Image (tube, rainbow, N blue to C red; front, side, top):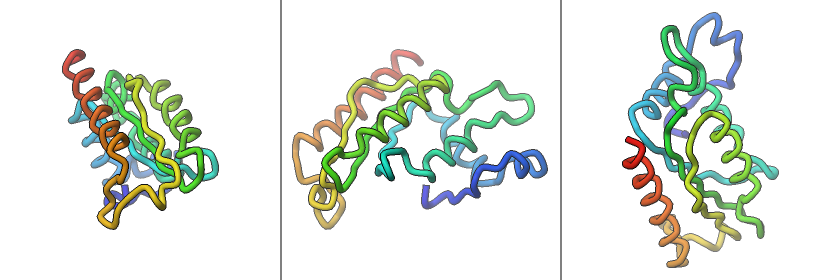
Amino acid sequence: LRDIPLPLYDGDIEGEQGLPPNAKLFKRMLIENSGMLISSPEYNAAMTAVLKNAIDWASRAEPGEPPLLAFRGKVGGLMSASPGNFGGVRSLAMARAVLANMGVIIVPTQLAVVRAREAFDAQGNLLDERQRETVRAIGAEVVSFAIKLG
């Protein structure tokens, strides 16, 4: 999401100007794909404000669109990381609830990486092979569910 900066969601901005260009870009990316993998840190026991903001912008229907076009019927996989001992499980629960409410089918397997400062090498790769396998499994589940639904 760093590559697609978005203003804070504001219904007045939307009402006056419509969706900002980057909101349209992000939303189009979601619409054009059957599935999504979301990996996010946890901030103060919740999903990050940047992630929630992007979801909020992408959830907005433009003229002639059905509600939640970018989310309804899509398949999602969730991963998180945190420097603490919970690994972001609270953010996973929040993201699962928000996305499921919007019609995203979230695969059962998820990953919460604890002590994230020690869990990755200098290139950003997970050190633990079981965690790397879980990431692959989540991706495979998203693809498998999307194919079955498609």
